Amino acid sequence: MPHAASLLGFALVSLGLVLTPGPNMIYLISRSITQGPRAGVVSLGGVALGFVFYMLCAAFGITALLFAIPYAYDALRFAGAAYLLWMAWQALKPGGRSPFQVRKLAVDSPRKLFAMGFVTNLLNPKIAMLYLALLPQFIDPAAGNVLTQSLALGSIQIAISVSVNAMIALAAGSIALFLSTRPGWALLQRWLMGTVLAGLAVRMAVEARRG
Image (tube, rainbow, N blue to C red; front, side):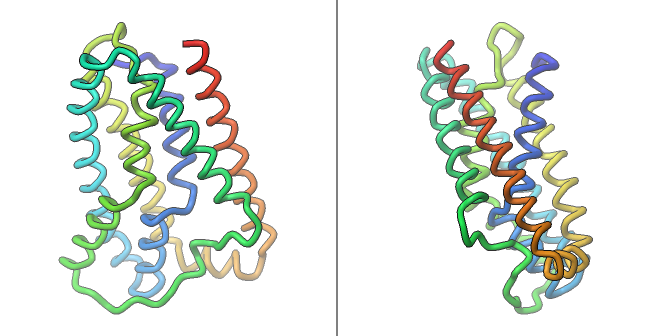
């Protein structure tokens, strides 16, 4: 199993990323506002299946990578740091758009809602980078089986992401109304998340140099 510090660190990274607007959040909010919270939850089921798919692929792929390329960690860490900086800029740049400013969507069946949630997550570059570039830095081969650590960390990410997205989907309408009348809160959220992501990126890059 991973060390407690690794579990906590990856949990914080996962929380920071799920709170940062991306394709999954925008789709779930759009669907919930257009078709109701139940449709958002059904769509979230497809998103969750996408997380499981990524976790299994990354877990087995990371296991093979660690045995094949000794310096793979450094490359992945720097890639992850660069991606976090890009995400921070997306949150902080002027004129950023709130995910709660959504477009109307056609009413779909539960089967299509689930399938679209799955496809949206599979095509989400944020999730791909999370598993390919960020997760490996929290794995310590000396702490035990790499595959077990990957699955444990991935399970934490899935639990956090599904829980947060479920709350957002259920409360999307109320949140959208609140932010539309209080733009200062939306700006505060963007700056807070941008600062957190930038700090994580710097920490990741520094640790890579020390390694």
